[in-house]
Image (cartoon, rainbow, N blue to C red; front, side, top):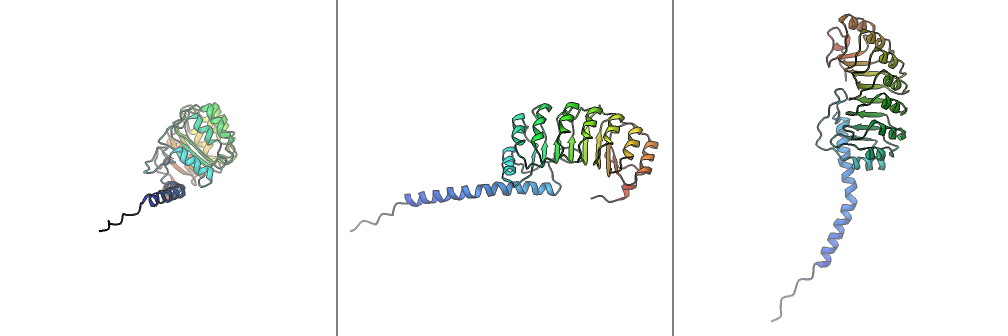
Length: 268
């Protein structure tokens, strides 16, 4: 009786299968990464940004690509923004980021360097939006940021800058939105900021301001919104402000004033 035929060796087919799988993985991996990043930034476009623009607080996100992944996406041209909230950004990281000429938006939740390292950002010729949420930016740091002339939106949530620093920021030719927290800014700083040529949205937190600043801000013709938390303002000061600028959207300590005409207007 003849012996049963032995099955043909599957070594070759296994090798071919492994090779095919490896080829497919190499082909599909960049697409998978790009799709994941697109999902993340799609959430941003639906107002699910990891940093709330009004409160400055971090929002949760199920998918937040690590810095290196975002850098590569910007380098390839599939992204023009980077947001790092869950991991600290080092001075070395910032130096690499500064080599991305197409970057338009940079959000840093925790910065492990010093404000001296911000000078690297002057190389970003397309940067329009910068959010620094835990860096104590001083007058010197503000002077550095004032040299990024492409900036349109600036959020300094833990600044310690004073009136001189605010005067530096006022020189930014395209700055439209400024949000800062600092106990060292006074009415004199706001007077300097009023010279800003493009400022339309201002959010001030914990500054030592009085009714004099309300009068100054009311005279800013381009102003569209004014949010303020803290300050020493009188009811009369607010009445004069609202009479002078009923067109400005105002929040005080995160609330509308009772007499604010804009409280009856629906805002998108």
